[in-house]
Length: 126
Image (cartoon, rainbow, N blue to C red):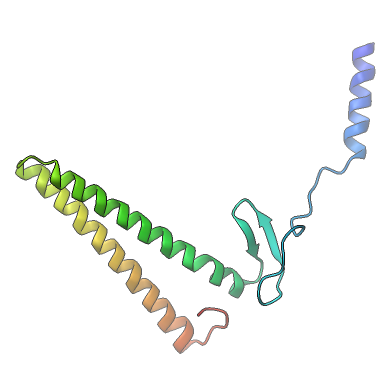
């Protein structure tokens, strides 16, 4: 009987309290004054043009960081190959792939800016 009473009181307590959090609370508006949503990654803008200016530098920064780490890994593999031609070839392919990935990322950024900014004149992408 005591367990049933405690369960009913707990259910009443849960149904009367608001468990949701306002996602817009604690975020200052972006530079253009648009609202932002507070997440674990920080305040993410809601409007598409503000979101793209927030998102693109992060994506290309992560791509550059991964490329750098792969180059360092390839150089470590190359220095520890010990004269083995197969290991040296694998390390060289790792470094070449990392450099190729970095160049593709830079070229994608160039194409995005060319098409979005210069040709289509999409606002908010600089």
